[in-house]
Each structure stands twice: as C-alpha cells, then as structure tokens.
Length: 353
Image (cartoon, rainbow, N blue to C red; front, top):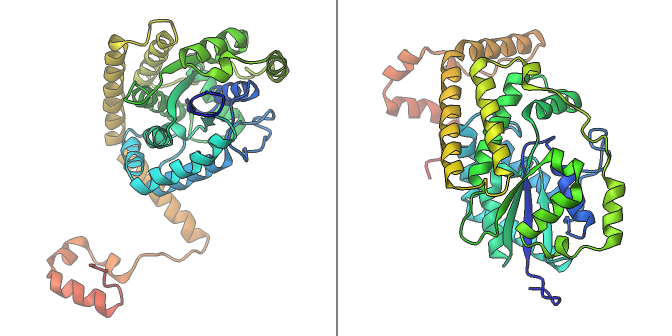
C-alpha cells in the first residue's frame, strides 16, 4: 500500500509479438501506470516505442538462450525448458528484488515483453512476494496479421507455417498460464481491433475488470495524450489465413484457436467450459507437432549436413575428436574403466564431484 491508499499491482501484458502489446502498454503508461526505466528505445519496426523495460528484455534473452528456446518457438517441449527456470528460487529472488524499488515510483506497474509468456509463472510469484497483486492482459490479433507483421518487420525466414504454429503454441499456453491462481487479481483478453476502434471504452473496461485505480481515475490531460499516441494506421498489415497457405490441419487448428480466443474477450466467455476447450486444443496441437516432428527427421539431418558442408567450405576445422571418429558400437564394447583411463590421459576426465 502506498501513502495514497492505492495497493500494489503489476499488470502483465502478454501475447505474441506484433499483436498490439506495445499499443496497450503504451496506452496504460500514458494514463499513469509506470513502465520501469530504462525502456527499450523505439526503432523502425515500432517508431512510437515498445513500452517495455530494458532489464526485462535482457533477462528474458538470457534465460531463453540458456534454455535453447526461441522467442517464437513452436515446440510444446519449449514450455518445459523455460518452466525449469521459472521454478528456480534464485531467479524468483532476482526478479522480486528488481521489482521492489520500482514501486517507489508508482504502486501500479506495467510489465510487457513478447518473451514474457515463457516466464509468467516466475513473474507471478515474484510480484506476490513484493506484496503486489498480479493481473494479466493478453492481446488478441488475427494470427495471419501477426505472421504477416513478423515477416514484414523482422525479415523472418522460417516461413508462414512455422510462425503460425509458434502463434498457436504461444497463445494456447499463455491462456493456460494466466488462468486464475491464488493471489491473482484477474485477467482480460483484449482484441487489437477493439483497442484501435475505441481505446477509451476498451481500456476503461480493462481498468474496472482488473481494479486498476490509475486507469479508473485517469485525468483528461492523460486522455488527450493517448489520443495523440494512437495512430489510426497502426494496423499496417492485413491478411487472412488463406493468404498463408498453411498445411490443412495447422490451418484448421489455427482458425479454431483464434475463434475460441475471441470468445474469451466477450463478457462471460472466460469460463470452465472454455478452459476445457483450450485443454483439448493444446492436446491437439501437441499431437500435430509430434507427428510432424516424427516424419521430418530427414529434413533436420539434411540441414545439419548442409551446415557442416558450409563450414568445411569456409575453411573451418571439424570439431570432432578422435574418440568421435570411432564407431559407436566399438566404443560401447570398451569397458568403462578403460574409457575413463583414456579420458584422464587426454585431460578430459569429468568432474564427478
């Protein structure tokens, strides 16, 4: 609680990159909520700014690199890898200690980053430890527009199918990660189109749903500032799923996920029946991904061999050791004690302690 009686809250703005998260975070910050400084500077892909703390981006990049997870990762397994980091006590302490002093600037903070969904569990715990209530807003933008925007501004070379699959993976797990838990203060789903069409109505509803005092009691000068901030041409990429030419099952699953997410944004749409539907959609996506992964091993192996050939063509030395050149069945026949002796002689003995 601060001297004015406004309790601590942290609004976590989640969702896929290029889905309007910067727009929402930019609106609520101009209405008085605090984005911890310093912020990520604007660039050509987002000239009006990202409204995201640089520290948050840096720590997420660090953790994603450690987990070998991409920002737009389509693997269901990636959630398990980042989940291991979320469960670490030192990581939770690190985030709590970073959050704490920012409440001295304002009792209601906004944290936004396209990488945020990978670590929502950690941030929820950290916020509660500082005496703050975590609340969540997930941005919803048609998946074809998200994919098109990433291809336009990020020069993504992984293709529409990969980007659509990563959108499904991100949104289905974000929905699961933001379901009500002990200590939470609620969640909302915000359509990007609604935000651009009538940001006052949409943001006011968000403020009341999440009991954000800064939004509920905003001033007229702040409202005028947001009007200047909102660009009627922000929706610069428009396309449909048909434009992406996705594989049939991925197309169907993406369309169904988008339809169900839209229902969550309607009053009364976020209910137990919807949660059960999303559980089924996640299971269907995992099944689809595992099937695709199982039959595409040759493609992965071909890519590995191509990379090796390029490395040799560029004159880079092979990194295989003498032991690596020995056939596996021969190595397996060598007694472990002998293998340990050889490693020790070569200075490669592992630390068993």
